[in-house]
Image 1 (tube, rainbow, N blue to C red):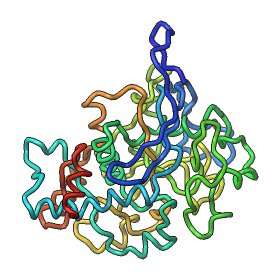
Image 2: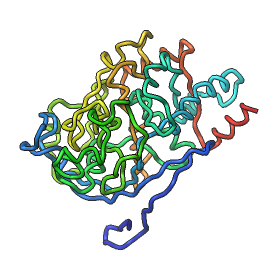
Image 3: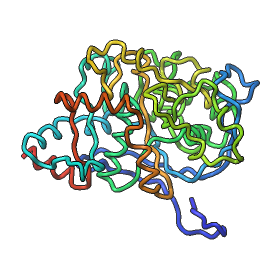
Image 4: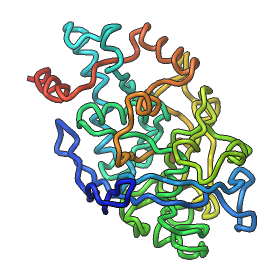
Length: 360
């Protein structure tokens, strides 16, 4: 796929590639998605449309790479294991986090308080990872970026929908017929055993799997009950980054695509869901509640996939996709760290080798 200069000349090409998770033998595929324009949201006459899916807004999306599949347990568990590694570094006085280098640090998710909830449907390496908060997903993308040298992040909501639609303007990426859903998606009628292995249904036209169903996916945006009303008065087409609805509240935040627990109407391309910390952490016995994990459904149907811009973002831009953006989340993280129940460490290309050295 060619990348063009402003005058239309070719300056390079985007191709699919395989990313190895540094320090492991685990890999995932990234698919080039061309830029273009589309209408974000659903038309008023779409069957099962919800009020939070409009008004439709014309969006221009820049070229990007999108992970072919949702982040799997194979990919997420090395990130989870950072918690113990960071604790060992701290105990040995190695790779110390200071005020000067803290910008290069992340917090790793604590060990699961009740693994039987998160793993009730299994933790096969090819199943999508689930029950992480948006904050944990953001820290994952920062870690992966630091060790790989490539910028990975959560998508903006408009980017996610553009990738899901894959050039379509219908209720689903394959058309308007919900009877076709079983070819492309895991949903309540065919996934009674929970999340299924990623990439086992047919992909959309961009070559992306499980954009509908299996697990719903985090985007960076806050959730808005009035949909895209705040964007309606802005010049069109609106750049995808300018369409992001940033928030400084811990919730609600937006997940897209629906899950194995949902009906077909809830896995449409434009369908949205807002997070609810009080409900989704309803069985968390900790105070403060975990900033990394959910304990209650629909959280077993919540995961994410990684995106990467064709053009690297500025330091200021990419930081917004990685860092804490809420005083309430910051308080919860700081409280866990002060009590010794959190793990914080530096992430850089040397981290995988440093962890191997610990294990010797």
